[in-house]
Image (cartoon, rainbow, N blue to C red; front, side, top):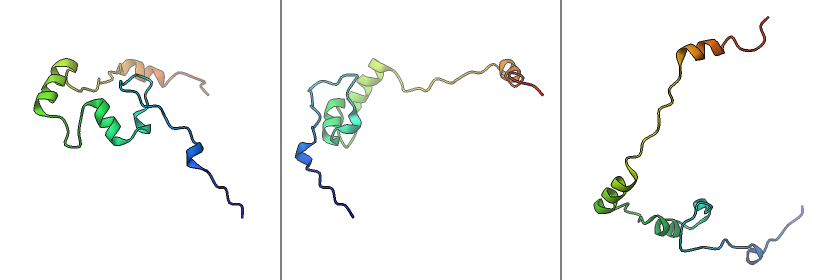
Length: 82
């Protein structure tokens, strides 16, 4: 059996900046830092903050993917035929 020891002080720690950028990986940050960057808390948003974000960003909606049934039917005939 071989034992490998890794010193954690040798592992580079991510640099934390005060502003959130598109390249930040929130999964790698501590929960407190994520809450701070998103302007939230463990209790969630206040009514005022939620209303402000609703007017600023709009409601959270998932766009429904519409498919053309005729094109879907014709796609079954694509490809090699016996």
